[in-house]
Image 1: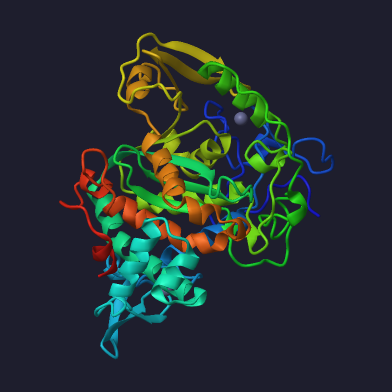
Image 2: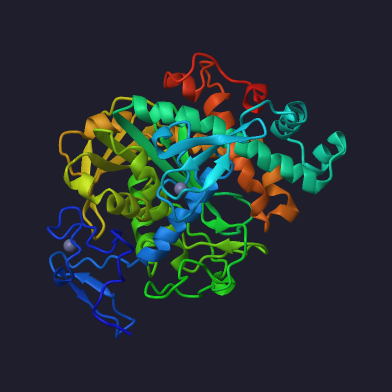
Length: 488
Ligand SMILES: [Zn+2]
Ligand SMILES: [Zn+2]
């Protein structure tokens, strides 16, 4: 077993480096800049010689494998190359015409050939949807809170046919969304994104986390992923060893004991400070599941260590916004989101093209309020520079990891994760019966197609208090779509 070495890069991908933004070794992949040891498991494997930080290590191959797995899910059913080994995997013909040749017809459907890998596929979306009427009814029942059992009874479907329809509807939604996503990404050159995470089924304790990133102000969702595969993997690991193959798959015995919830401190500063203490009680600060945490492993499928899902998520986001000149990513206070974002955009962070801002606020904060008085507090081992303020009864705090002094008042007014948080809350309310069905708690797989359907409905159909959809707010369309429009 080699010692004193970083886990090997996967192609160009090496994510193991110092993640302290102010450190000269930030982003350095030179092993000379670190102490690397594997003989004493009680001590950190990697220590930065400059700042003394010990960032947790990742298996780069496993991050890359998760990136491909996510990309395959996002591309499922799209008119796009589906070869996991191809650079064009998941790039829709619609927007990447230069990657494909038109290649004759299959019946009345256009066939294409990928220029990257020569594989061929048909455009299953050309022609009319013969099942449109039934699928519209199914969607209408879903969105009015009916259970799968009720929908099957009303539409005379058996459960298997129901899920076949659900998967087809989800694929159609992904295809619809691809056109709007592309317009948004290509029309934009500077923007505020926000990332949030929440349990997929809050009452299930099944360990499945749902991560979503979108445009912070309109609430338009671009990308979402869960740390769960609906199929079983053979090699599950109890402890994370970044030098081991398959180390991203969590073993079923990983679940800890249910612990007494610690009382929530009063005040925003107290809560931010308590979060840092919770983070440092993890043996891996980037893995929320390395502290004793109670969950019940799903009885089908496999849980992924959250850091692999999160790093892969940002790697998938990166090419979407490559041409943007300036990007700010907001997130709630969570080192996993911070580290994954900073690591993936490491060169852009140094060029100040990308920056990352933590946003925390209490429920009394009124959106858009101007800060009254700003207090600067340095917190945690990282000496993160937080700005706290109050307005009326509400409190809000931000931490700009770019350490740009003088921007505090601006971020306190404009930085927000609200729209993303509402997206997840609405899902849990809208589909409460389905999400909390006792039998489904340990079978999250059936919810995965629903996530894409919900993203399409939220971006294109759902209207806020001003009767405008997120897609309208971004100028991508001039009217809300209906469920029927989604199925055309
Ligand atoms: Zn350092
Ligand atoms: Zn290809």
